[in-house]
Image (cartoon, rainbow, N blue to C red):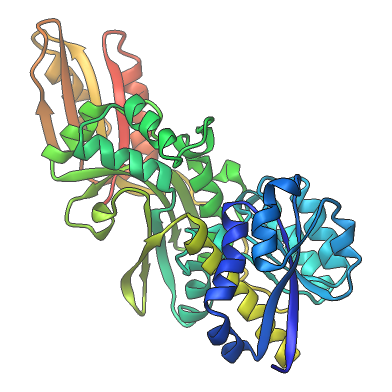
Length: 428
């Protein structure tokens, strides 16, 4: 072997422990592809005793002070797997400024401070790769940046949060309530004790910031992405969607409209024959609509030790190749456009409304008048059985602008005896 590439891990948890495993299992192939032997030299941990066994298995030196990694001239790549913003951001900046290349899976950090980190990497002629930050083991970022570089992407959307997809799968297949599905996900380790980022769509929104950068070259802030999670999603709406030929999924989407972009996260009624409707349990999938290839979907495990570690190691392989070729410092994503955000008048979709109204003569007509007064027509309209006092009316509209949808919501809200139970986008 001509050369060794020594790396350090920041964190030796689920994904961190998967990295030396992948490097060991695929050692011969990686060596052939890179011309190097990639070795985990050190790992930053909080508690050495807790990680002593895995450190011994792979010959890793454990440290509790980042300076021991920063000042080690033999370590050329730092792999950040701590998560959250700090101290991860500080460590990455220090590593780049010291001339060390960085691989990270930190979606929160990249979505909020990615541009700053890319600038630091470029200034110091270092590599900064983060394939594992979106959809775990699915190589979607490298696919967009490289394989689809010659294509013009119109839309990228997908199921990019395994926790909520697991919960929705159970709500559909076993008719579990939201609360029961969440409890089950937590028991299996798919959901944290505080599931806020997952169930409120924040995790998916972070990933859409990154996907938008790669697909359209535009940098969004989290506040630019309208985000709605599945918290409180009613089993009745899931069952009604099924009756109407749809499956409700938490979808992150980003679309180019002329020269502006729109991105959002929320429950969406997906037609049952759409590829995304068949994505079950904790699996992820990203669906791309582009001018050249047309429609394509990338499916796989969105989390877990081996899938995510595989993406991390793929970034290490790219870094190793760059070092061998003397071309380090190229940006992972070099596509840049001026960021322009679409207005509500430009965004067009079908919408699902579920409204509870008094069960008396004239209410159905009153609701119909509200919708038609906004110049909107129905694709489907159903009045469910009532309890004698209140009735539930479900509407799927024909295509309309997001501005019109908001006007309908406002009009419904102005009638005291009407209650809007749910309002979701419908995928064409």
